[in-house]
Amino acid sequence: MTQDVREDFADPALRTDPHPVYAQWRRETPVRRVKLPNGVTAWLVTRYEDARQALTDPRLSKALPVGQTTDSALPPAVGAAVSRHMLSADPPDHTRLRRLVSGAFTARRIEALRPRIEEITDELLAAMAGRERVDLIDAFAFPLPIQVICELLGVPAADRDSFRRWSNTIVAGAAARDRLPGAMQAMVSYIRELIAERRAQPGEDLLSGLIGVRDAGDRLSEDELSSMVFLLLIAGHETTVNLIGNGVHLLLHERTRWERLRADPALLPSAIEEFLRYEGPVETATFRVATRELELGGTTIRAGDPVLVVLLSADRDQQRFPAPDELRMDRAQNPHLAFGHGIHYCLGAPLARLEAQVAFGRLLARYPHMRLAVAPAELTWRPGVLMRGLLELPVVPGPA
Ligand code: HEM
Figure 1 (tube, rainbow, N blue to C red):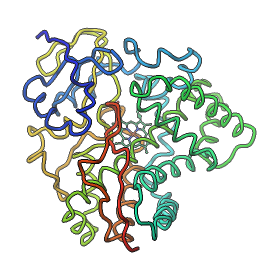
Figure 2 (figure 1 turned 30 degrees about the vertical axis):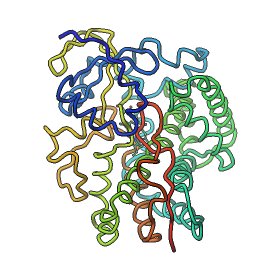
Figure 3 (figure 1 turned 90 degrees about the vertical axis):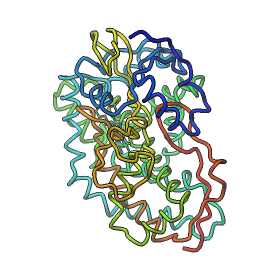
Figure 4 (figure 1 turned 90 degrees about the horizontal axis):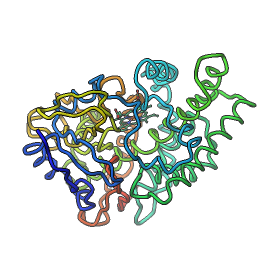
């Protein structure tokens, strides 16, 4: 099947509510040729079954460069220092890079972080007490995962604001194109300094552990090490914030949900899975490139073509989920793709789930009367097609 290139995926109006548009595309052009905001032409995969196939198909590579990406504006040394990580590698490199950190991300290791996550959560919630109006993204959803990943990696508290600025710019991609090279450069310099410091004075943190592996003679190169730190920081920053923000928005938007979850905290785990499915934090998985011709949902993808899997759309596919547009906090079967699928399945999923459990549980208990401070139509969504999240979530906390 041949298809014209559509330009509507880049339309900023799509950010406000992409779901009806995706529903139409799943019906009419489930594998759709589009021009992205950065000018690259790619295939969008919008149905669940096609998405699963694309995420596991070894003919779709993560290691090939995608046309003229925004990264092409970077000096090569900076590009190399951020791009040699597991999410842009195929086996056997992927296997090796992932194995090095996966030991630190087992469910048991993560569970051991619970008391510290509870402490950070309680501190952030306490700081909202008595305030008339609070931006919940700024005061809670962002700082919680940032503090956790920074502590895990050993990034000093004083540097976290700079990190937040750089990583916001990086994830906005084409939407912040002019600031991107500067943010990348700053982040790379910072990571290199941090590595040098930890090398001189190792601690108990994950970064010191990774340096130990590198220096003990594994084939991990200096670029691979800085890229790994870069990936963990960005992935740890920019995703969980949207899980918390989108989830609180869904609960406050229809207050009966808030009351129900407050009355029955045992629902929390399945409610969190449903937030992930219904309004997932990551809108599209990262680029894949076809290494040879293949068939996807009846469409021929040619060698060299970039492919983007729209997780947000796949998770509303009525062929897979009964009543996909209903938020059912007790949904029993929920094989959503919010954390991806296959060999690149999110390494941080146990950490993200734990953070979300603590965050929602403590928030509901401490501020039972919280409500939205603006009409839902006034909320603004983050630019760019990679992440799905609110820029701000103004709330009235109410009495603690
Ligand atoms: C990969 C989602 C939190 C680390 C992924 C992928 C998705 C995802 C969709 C696969 C991307 C692809 O295949 O193109 C999420 C969501 C999160 C979250 C929705 C929060 C709710 C985290 C956290 C960390 C993390 C907290 C680390 C601290 C990673 C890493 C990969 C990854 C390292 C690459 C895995 C690989 O290539 O093998 N994540 N993530 N994520 N995520 Fe997450």
